[in-house]
View 1 (tube, protein in one colour):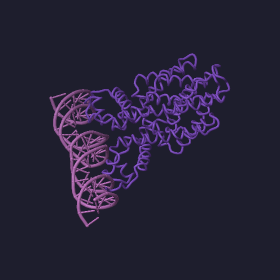
View 2 (tube, chains in turn purple, cyan, red, orange; view 1 turned 180 degrees about the vertical axis):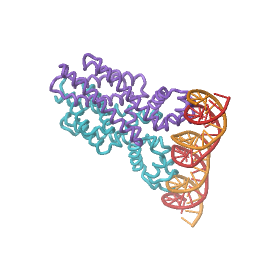
View 3 (cartoon, chains in turn cyan, purple, brown, green; view 1 turned 135 degrees about the vertical axis):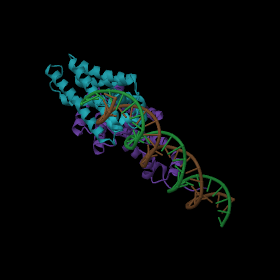
View 4 (cartoon, chains in turn yellow, purple, brown, blue; view 1 turned 90 degrees about the horizontal axis):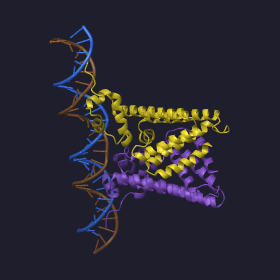
Length: 191
Length: 191
DNA sequence: CAGATTATGTATCAATCATTCCAGAAAGGG
DNA sequence: CCCTTTCTGGAATGATTGATACATAATCTG
């Protein structure tokens, strides 16, 4: 029928995600993308439509990965408190390992004022995090791990907000001690 | 001696700060700045040197204003807990009033990967917030408003991190209820 | 193998980017 | 009033932006 594509779109999307993640939307030029993906502009526009559309696709991919990670971390754990602490501690370590990345969703929230669909997607992604946490906290409360007087949704909203803060101080290179102190204090809200 | 400048540099810096704040560094073009400041490019480069230098100057200005506001809010208040709550509640309202702004420091932390001096300034500004909070909390602890078992620095780091999170969820348009729930939960760390 | 169809890469596009240049205008000192 | 100095604003600057045109190459169907 026709010539077959010489590169894998999903793999290319992942590489583009990584580049947008590190460099930001505006600072990533089309030439940067073409070099990173090792394709020509013809192939690029045939496959992705535009830089904007690829960014949205990469954001989608990131949100999906992040969602799965969180779902698994909360689902597998026998107890909610250690699980939440572990998730946040892992984010702290990730930011320490590479402060140039941070969180693509957080980055998008401040980088995409002129890109409405990205802003909408960010709002939705944060709501997803809230929802996952609220569900896990509710189950934990039913198991007696959390005081029945607490409101799981309120706690989830708190943790979601704190999580965003962790990504910012991580990107701002405040250091491990700073972030871990903040985390230790934050965990006290849950007991 | 020579011709006098027809515009006020400080006033122009404030207007530029506002523009960078709303639109971000990359999305604010020189033409945008020239129009906003109502000056020609000759005057611009004579007064500010470059777009990058003006951005750093605007960032400096923002940090200074933010620092003074926080210092005053914490200094004037008779009690630390209502003061902290008030500061955070005011940020929530500010983000609701104009979600396109957020916090210039937070924005800079994700928008200026290629601008090292800005990144350094961001780190320092967050340390300043930590320091102001830690000082106020220590004094409050001496006055008996906070349990002597608590570590003021840890609390300050927690609040600083949470504060960054508030700015993110504010920019992400999560809504008043969401942010206020998060705040209510966060305040429990302090008692 | 012929033909239809799609991918590929190069050349090119107009638009915009930050910056520089420069001729003229304003202002104070002599 | 003249001279020096600085400011002003618009016209270039070359570089880079995202995107397109197009000729060629590859692949599958028949």
